[in-house]
Image (cartoon, rainbow, N blue to C red):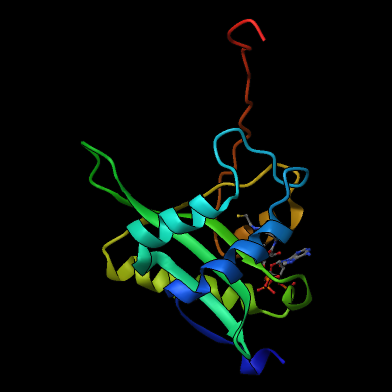
Length: 154
Ligand SMILES: CC(C)(COP(=O)(O)OP(=O)(O)OC[C@H]1O[C@@H](n2cnc3c(N)ncnc32)[C@H](O)[C@@H]1OP(=O)(O)O)[C@@H](O)C(=O)NCCC(=O)NCCS
């Protein structure tokens, strides 16, 4: 099954498939982040600004995985950072090595663009992702605590 999965750059016809797969994977319950929400604008935004860092995995014209990323150039930093923002594999294809394959291609693309450090973030209780990224050589996970201040009268 995994053998006939193709990994390629995302194209405009992939937008709905990527969006719907993300809807299944990044539910508010599972991945509550304050600063990013999975929605159609998010997919469109990455595709229109960073198409070279958007990859999809397809099988028989169905999207079964994707990654969306970007490059961050920090002023006064000699490093060029790659940032893997959204990364997901269809449930029925998880743990088959597909994530490793897409990640490998994404990493190669970043290297071709001169990136020397990659960043990812995920919730502290996302054991799958943490194990995956540690196995890919990521180190130093740090806990982030979000505090919120209610503004206005409502
Ligand atoms: C994280 C994710 C992309 C990994 O994709 P995947 O295709 O399942 O990964 P692989 O099959 O290549 O797994 C590689 C390694 O990751 C680790 N891993 C993957 N899934 C795991 C799980 N459910 N439990 C523990 N370790 C896991 C294992 O070390 C695995 O190697 P092994 O199978 O030889 O033990 C996938 O689980 C996913 O889509 N999760 C939901 C979305 C998400 O959390 N995205 C990341 C944050 S944006």
